[in-house]
Length: 265
Ligand SMILES: O=P(O)(O)OC[C@H]1O[C@H](O[C@H]2O[C@H](CO)[C@@H](O)[C@H](O)[C@H]2O)[C@H](O)[C@@H](O)[C@@H]1O
Ligand SMILES: [Mg+2]
Image 1 (tube, rainbow, N blue to C red):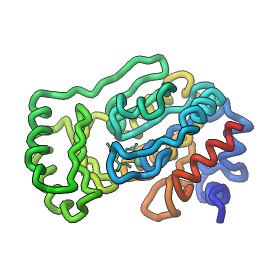
Image 2 (cartoon, rainbow, N blue to C red):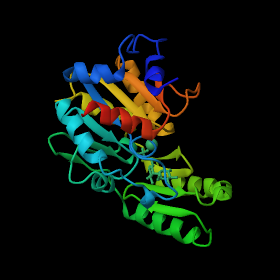
Image 3 (cartoon, rainbow, N blue to C red):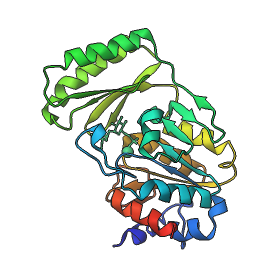
Image 4 (cartoon, rainbow, N blue to C red):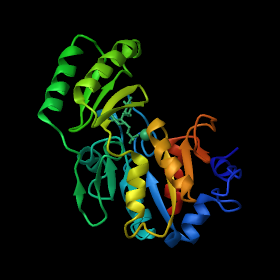
């Protein structure tokens, strides 16, 4: 089955696109749609470490062209911090939500930062110290969030889980645990990706449009639920799976980049 056929196969819901493909919807009726895109594992292939991701040279300009076609109704919704994510697609700037929805830069440029604290700063430093002798474990400091990566040391997951759970107690009720692909994070609890998508959809140029959300991981389920509830369309990167609330699937980030390239000839 081709990826386009798979997109069409989610016909078990009112929210599905029915006879039309995502490609034709976005190309024939771009003023009706808003697009929300996850970054790691969705736009970009996963890499061994957070800094090792490769942005294909044509991708930033293709996203910019697609965004213009959608009247600016394209946003990035990522677990990364906003500053890091933005430099990946430089020189182009898009509306963006970072830290899994907790921070946001609106279409008008207004920034909503997630608050860090001195205690959280000390907690992050202690995580670095506590894992210093665990080869392959990487602690990613994202300001008001922190990620403990074990992709290079999968056996460390069992030790990292209780360490992160104790750190969460120390962080307090304004933070929560976020699981992901070979990573355990502590992120601000105040908003998830679904909340970020809802906030964008309340603003121009997103307001009044049907939403398409595309993601690959546990954190993206929140935005899938939001767009499904609002009559939009959710797409998961990977094989079709009963473990997701996404209505459709695309097999890989590479296939998604192909769809984007086909939309911006
Ligand atoms: O919401 P996303 O844009 O998908 O961000 C989720 C996390 O992505 C990054 O970690 C993941 O990608 C890395 C690079 O491919 C990979 O090495 C790691 O194993 C993955 O978990 C990022 O480093 C995190 O901060 C994001 O939360
Ligand atoms: Mg992802």
